[in-house]
Image (tube, rainbow over all chains, first blue to last red; front, top):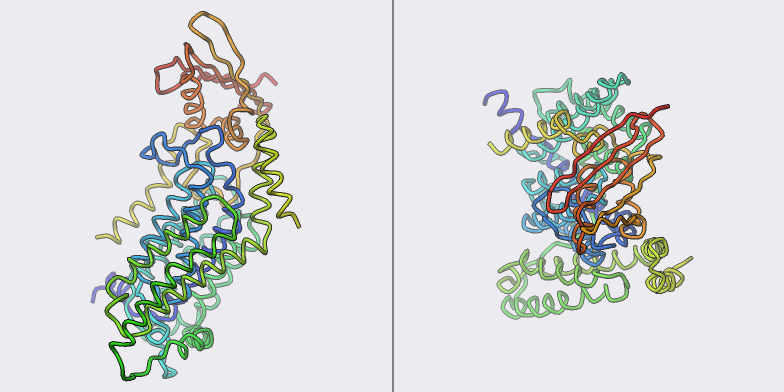
Length: 375
Length: 128
């Protein structure tokens, strides 16, 4: 194997892509609900919009459209973080998330673009089950995962440009540059022939953590990047043990035992899954935000595509776990929005803007809603 | 092949900033990981009808405050879109928007003759 091929296709501990994928998807779900949804009221105001890319043309996203896209993306992302991710679902999450920010300049948060790049990498990640990534033996499973290396290099490019622009402005640039170098080399740390790198890797976690703690940044970027650094730079054995502990319930719950009555069970699984797919989006009826019901219903439809033939051909429990993960996503959306100030912020911001524009009727309606959710 | 293309795109996109006409547009460049600082520009807009009558455009009442912020930061794409939208009204000959800033940005004037795609921009440096 040539050095470049070894770099891209060499072995990595499978625990890393497994954990990175789930960590980012789970955080992304809560990020969309808690940080993006409250700003949804500004969409469609005055029927004016400028998108990030000209191919959107004169399309003006409404608040319902924006919130629907975010609900869809968040619920699907969390459901994939909870149960074995599916490539089709990741493609849909990437498309939904990118559509969410790209449809308007109102969302110009720099790291949303980075998350879209990450999601593109995730499409090509190995779709591992907990048992595949954390086998019963104490030996950490390894395998080739070029998309994970691409994920690390993508992160390195971001730090490279942060360093380069800092240097151009005459500011200190060494910290992001060390981060860049760290991410370029760290994907090789799990290879047997590089023991020195394995020993140095944990130290390389310090620069990204320090950078994201010290530099002013928008939104949850520090949470993403510190979490990613912890997974990427932690020694193989530690990450394996941590992953084993985290996935212990999932591994024991999803255990399938061969039983009799396969045909009967297949039909039970089919009807139960179908029922679950219909009922799960109904949770969103209690959310009281425009577009969320549609978003959750679309997530259930997406789940049908994800399950495909599995839905009616298998006697295994897998479809039920997928439906359970969808339920988990919808429930988490409802609990998150009810327990946080997201709904209040949405209606309050909408009322303030309507007042500013002189649309007092709309302001009264929005303020009533905001008062209902004030805490 | 995909890896090379994906990386190349990521490398090239931030570099496009160097060729961008609009200096306030630093999207996808990683120049800042933070939100842009609020400007201190004063914006006024007006339109001229075919009969020569001039009218002020109440910017704050027509679009969301965030868009007003973009206009005040001289984000060209937003300014042009806003001016084009005002041309949708009947009998409008041309639309004008002026940004007066207290800092080195000075005064920027944008003028769009309805039917055109892009406004004509003139910049004057601040006198103090």
